[in-house]
Image (cartoon, rainbow, N blue to C red):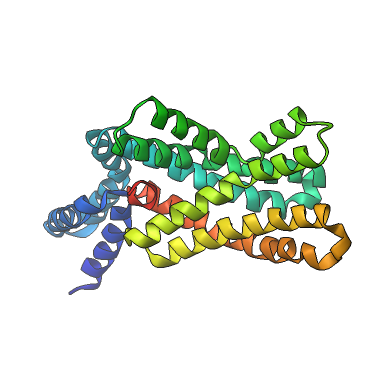
Length: 264
């Protein structure tokens, strides 16, 4: 195999990642055969043309697959955007100010909204639909896909409730973590995605719940000392890296068309 052919194989293998898994091998074989039929400078002009057209071909494949591939692309984009926003807020805090960075850090989880909607509504559809299931899917989407917004609204609504209001706010804030844990457990049991991805999702969701549990214990059982705040500290240390890696990994898989990450 010549160096030119090896380079073309690598180039086409990388470009093919944008296509649905089922279409990649055939596209690589056909594209390579066409390119090898040419020579010289023309071969590389054709190679550039073939690679630049891959996004258009990927869109055509998704259009032929109905609404689910588009939903997966939107879900993947949301997860990747959430990761980029969180990292950007952490890195640029000294430049944009701590208050602005905190706002974007708290707003970033809203990028999960398309992914949660895809998971909840696809699950409701596969179980037969019906008003109750669609309503439940909507509640899950709003509760788990909009970050801290529901908890903030509950906090405003329960001002003056003291203990009960505080507990209700934390229960509402735990919905995203609970959704992530359940989704990861289902994925792990179904073996429909890498085990590492399911484990990361479980760690991210579980650590967020640990943070909330620690905050509740520190506030409600303060007489027992600072040790009750330990779950929050450990949870936060685990949550940020596991959530970032899970979001980027799951987002890229969704962008590639691997919808079973959330829908199987």
